[in-house]
Length: 160
Image (cartoon, rainbow, N blue to C red; front, side):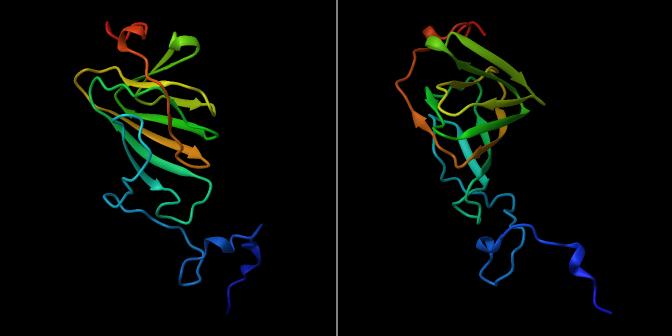
């Protein structure tokens, strides 16, 4: 007896995601096979697990970002991309606002949304442990580096 496939109704056209075999299927990026060729904001180590570089995704970048102890990014924004982040381990700070006078601190288990075109600086607050984030952007991993701000101009950075 053939199974009744009518209850598995497709809504929309996903044919653009066909694999060379013709099958539309989930695409797995195995640990260790992530794509390291991502945009950079001055020393952040970004690897993509889901991106246009190595999956059929066209409107999503999803990856892991690692920052060394004491790291701070250059001033940057992510263009039109909406950015979501999740702190896997470590303590983070994001500077933003007029002259980067404002900041939010995060720790393991915290989530963050960074709006499009928002200039900011990402930091690892810990001087001894790395910081690891999971980050997603849509439509892609856009990084636009801006003129940098000296450490001395970032409130509470040198005394953290």
